[in-house]
Amino acid sequence: MQQEEKTELARWLTHHLVNEFREHGMAVPSDVVHIAADPNATFEHLWLSFRALVNMRPARPTTCEFLVKQDLLLAAMINDAGITTLAAAEPAPETERIRLWRGDITTLAVDAIVNAANSGMTGCWQPLHYCIDNAIHTFAGIQLRAEMAELMQAQGHEEPTAHARITSAYNLPAKHIVHTVGPIASGHPTDQHRRELAQCYTACLDLAEANGCLSIAFCCISTGVFGFPQEEAARIAVDTVRAWLANHPGSSIIVVFNVFGEADETIYRTILNI
Image (tube, rainbow, N blue to C red; front, side, top):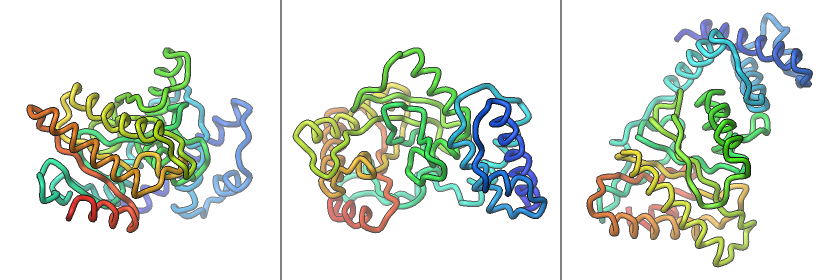
């Protein structure tokens, strides 16, 4: 898609959201109002305004036109970033069923990606926050928050730690998203936190297997704002996945450890002997 087309889509979507916010009595950030009203606003400014608004937007019905335009823009953004297939993930020497890949999980075409969710399960509501929960909800589209809001309303309470839920991935190249709430360790994990983190990986694998997924990519659960030390979390992740695969010899699932930063990549390469 040409840059001009993306700019017009972002402009239309931003205008639509500003008007929607006002109709529902919601405040719109002043910088977003300024950008939406500027006929010369750049794509980058319009994109950030659109992203900020969808991060704050409650789950509510919208128009078919909005969804069509949103989906076109998100597809273009993901295509521009470059879609990565399972073949790009580097196998561990021990088995090709455990792999490592460094990159943006929202561009990974596997059967399921794992989202490190919060207990509300409806995504990150902080505008332009670059946590994985925010990124996944942004690029999946507003349909994901709507689905999760419906699930949580039916459940009637916050999601417990170390469970897993599966949804469509909507605009992402993955087929499904598996959502799990990791333990909040705040830099000082207890034995309970360690057990809960291991249970996150087990629950995600069980759910992916039950839904016929042949590949799943894990983010580094709980190591961001939840404060689980990176190396200890990685060792728990790898040990848990190895044990699950050993206990499920009939499974064909391939597990990808997805890392985004250099520090996590170094940790996983050491643990996996890659």
